Length: 313
Image (cartoon, rainbow, N blue to C red; front, side):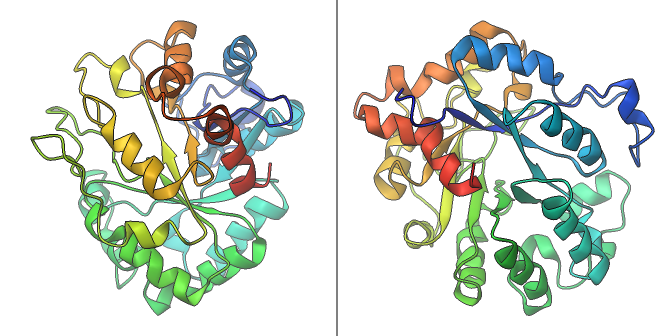
């Protein structure tokens, strides 16, 4: 990699909260271990030459992530998340602003969950307001939050699932028509995570391995929209199904559609079964080893340049 271009893992997690953080957490859960500690991640980064990890921050871990960013001198950036039930009310807007102005985060994580998921976790879906933000985040009711994020000049990271894949591109386009300077990152990209316990293949792949992108995807590629990919992640699970296809044909379609300056590499390393250096290296080297149509400059963008541009790193 060219030393002038930073190497960035755009999808990482830490959550091994230390004793000094507990009193600052609004909802401390000692069972929550989604990710290792920052020192563990730094060890892995140093071994592979990764300059920065972008941390995906659960709402109640915000102050913990704020401390980690301060103590590690530019090695981490963070995407902040708040309770979406507060949006688009003034309390929620102020909380969003605080994530950027006070915590120093580089983006906002937007993931209001499917109503059925909220029910399964004991919540009342109606608390999220009407029309529901999972299906109708482009409704005028939610314009204040998009306006604010646009003004804050940070990207909003929207999570793609099988449940919203069919309509998310069109909805994002509707928002961007109103707020053309808003920057969007598609978390997980347009090949959503495989679903346990069956781990079915990606919904954009048919049985013959042909790729069909959802309606609006090609238009998104012309807007301020960035596309995350998680190559090699599925190969580190025991089921061995690859959401990108047996021959990684989905990555090729993404590359041809979005181009290297709109695609960013992420690991979501916490999702692997055994978080070892060997497995992190497997993910780090995956597209270099398997996508021989990518040039050195393509790889430099995908492995860091794009994330630096999207997140102002």
